[in-house]
Amino acid sequence: MSSYCANYYGSINCHNVVNRFGDRCKLCLALKSGASLSDGLLPEDCQRSKGSVVDGARRHHQR
Image (cartoon, rainbow, N blue to C red; front, top):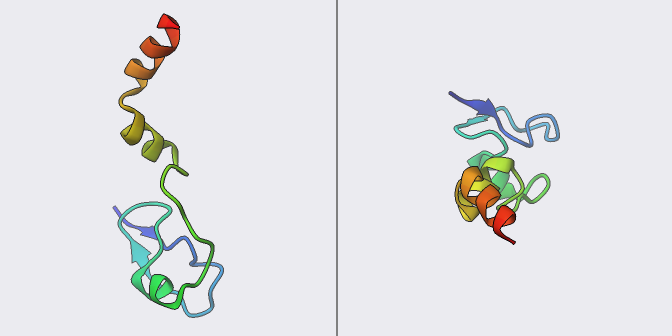
């Protein structure tokens, strides 16, 4: 499933779609157009870097 580029409404030249919500298209990346996105901004990125939600809850409970 595709989504619009994160900069779709912010750039007059952008008319592209991306595979993952929140990503910018190649044109916007090349032109350095729009806000810079960093890893961990989306909830799914946080889960990938910290393990599963269940593991996180277990670690929190053991403190």
